[in-house]
Image (cartoon, rainbow, N blue to C red):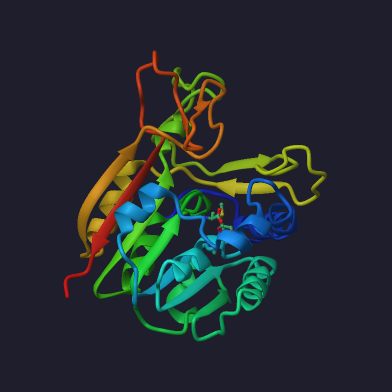
Length: 277
Ligand SMILES: C[S@@+](CC[C@H](N)C(=O)[O-])C[C@H]1O[C@@H](n2cnc3c(N)ncnc32)[C@H](O)[C@@H]1O
């Protein structure tokens, strides 16, 4: 089954929710936008190590939010970055930040479009690096179509890099992360109606209806493999970026892990897939 079941208005509902949350995120401690303007680098150490040197390479960031990670790759040496997100306020904020940092649109451009329309929306037909993740795939109903779209934008000799929260987490209880309470293989849309956002759970928001999907690791890897890209690695990580379960402890490196006396499970994963030159 390519398209998972879900309400017809999933895109409109999700976009309204994201549009409303952009200013909240920009003002949040979580994203620390003032700190970003100074450091211009939000890339996690494991991503930098796995992606490698981007000097002189073009990079497309799918589902870029308001562009912090996108602009970080430019700061790290990419020749040109393009960010795509379906939220107009997010794209406007990204453009404003890029201009503030002194980048012209040849170096950093941002387009407002659905990720499934990326091939028609972005300025170039292919990029050396297509980068995405950190809470991106869960907003998409059809992971095969996502993989086809992302892969179609990888230039010869280039690669797709995805870093995501591990879908096993969606099957476990929220407090301990040790009991299986949800179906790992569920294809159903997960419709929620929660005010607030992950940067401020108490924020008084009005567009609260969201529609998400969980994508088992096998579906993601098989979808990428089916595009013809060569999968270089699938890494599973014992740490995550937020308090996913009550039992997680924040380490000095800022990542959250299970306590040392608990058996570990994967909390994130990352994947790299190349197109031969
Ligand atoms: C959690 S954020 C991505 C995280 C990003 N790495 C960050 O923290 O800055 C998810 C992004 O996906 C975007 N998004 C969700 N569904 C989308 C779709 N169908 N097409 C394009 N963008 C989408 C949202 O607007 C949001 O900016």
